Image 1 (cartoon, rainbow, N blue to C red):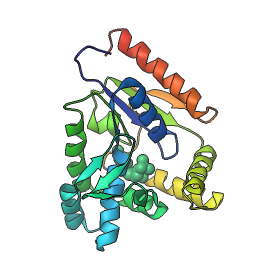
Image 2: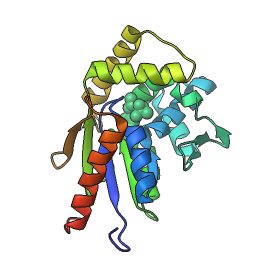
Image 3: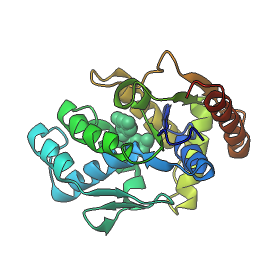
Image 4: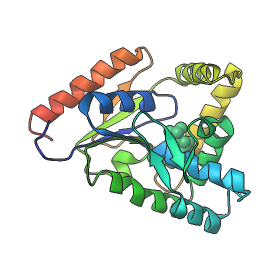
Length: 227
Ligand code: DC
């Protein structure tokens, strides 16, 4: 696809819209690198929680974000400072902490450099909250993935159950709503739909259906000279 030109596919949207699963599958199908930027914020938050750094301690958090050695391996495993943290970063407490540390401009700055570096050598499918707006405003294809809050909460509940961490629907729903509110209303790089993004609501779709919709969209856009 696209000869030697490197392609950036940016996927943004709220938690539970299906970004991670879909971005990973699309990357596999296209032979691109899959970058989960939420995992990077989660890794910094986990390091802060484990080392007792306060979630409002900007100076030290910026230092952690800069020094964090984060590896995103094919298949979705995540390593932080030579340690496999794939399961640890999925803890709901880490999700909330990630949402908090991600409000800090100095933390975002440190991770932005790492995110841009991934796309230097490879075509990427990158997902997060500000990929199409801040990280790659010139991305070849921008997708904004969304779903109703209840559907997103149901999906997250299932993920937690599968991971052996059963929770209540109400708690999960409240946690998601809180995180969305924070992610959408922060001053620095808030979650918003880029004006040139394609909006896709996955509420009524299975993962397989959503995957086909996105793949078609990507193929149409990359074969008609736009990318
Ligand atoms: O996608 P996720 O749930 O793993 O992301 C965890 C938190 O990280 C999310 O609540 C906000 C933050 N985040 C961000 O601010 N910018 C991104 N590009 C990705 C995630």
